[in-house]
Amino acid sequence: MEPPGSTTLVVVGDEASQAIRSIERFANVQAASLADATDDEVARWSASTSAPYVVHDHDPLGHVAAAWVEFFDDQSTFGVLELEIERAMDAAGRREISVPDYYVVLHPEVLPVTWKHWWLGVLAAESPTRVIPWPSADASLAALLRRLPTGRAWPEVQAWLPRVPMSVPDLVGLPSADQSAEGA
Image (cartoon, rainbow, N blue to C red; front, side, top):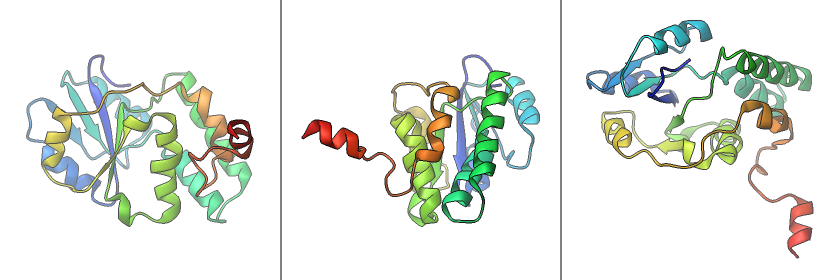
């Protein structure tokens, strides 16, 4: 779990470790590449700091994201996606994981299409200001820390993760046919 009072950012993308290294030297930032760490290791590492900003590349919803992408890319089954959602909801309920304050998505323009829909569609639909597309994996992240957007916090994962299988790429964030008919 993140330390009280810290703002947590998870950096995602091929250059995440490079981006994290670019801001490690700042005194108000605790930053590390933890992509291969367990949720428990990340929680212990995060709790050991009093820095205002905690930045890493361990996505607590990474298994859900991968299962969603694989399902819609016809590489996995619906059952795998359901299992990963259930596991994430159970872990969140036990306070073993929590969604970071912000996701910083590096170079979203070069992401594979389904991954782009996950980051900028499924996740952004739940809290639009908490998913930030970022064009560079350099020290410009320090400037981002100084001007993070405000907005509603993430809803509890139990409120939105069960809807993830119905979030279809290319349609995420668009009004449903029922909503469109109501507005007509």
